[in-house]
Length: 221
Image (tube, rainbow, N blue to C red; front, side):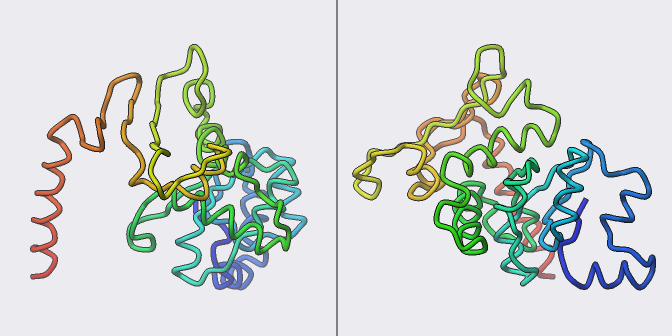
């Protein structure tokens, strides 16, 4: 659920219930490893410690937070405390691209600015937030989120051979800071090829484009 996204949300909770939203959830018995707090912009140090102690998760949506002026989450502090942080996009209303690679880069850069440390959330940690951490938040870390024998073969091929991504000394750093979704060439889901040479392998994408056009015209009316 969306949690501590805005200051207004916290003010309203204090007015109606006398406590901040996270404390209300704790009293209701909902601060468990099944809780994914989306956004988590306005956590106090004590609340961060509570999230870590109870094994809760946070879904960080940096572009949405910026577009809505919700604030900038203290992701480095959450990670340092041991909270599992995944990367999300929020919805199209507050994030026009829905691009997890852009979110990964923005998350890494914002974390450094907020923490005042250039070593906060390095590339490898940002990549983990965008992959295995998200899988863990959903309880799916044994099936997806990393490339490992026995897991489902959810794979993405990223082309780093173009002039704009040269020279490449650290592929992970390049994936986080230099590459974008335009560099994704192939995608496999459970071992089945879904994107080949940047083109969908099924007609479903073209059908979605038609539906989007129909809804666009309907909403205009």
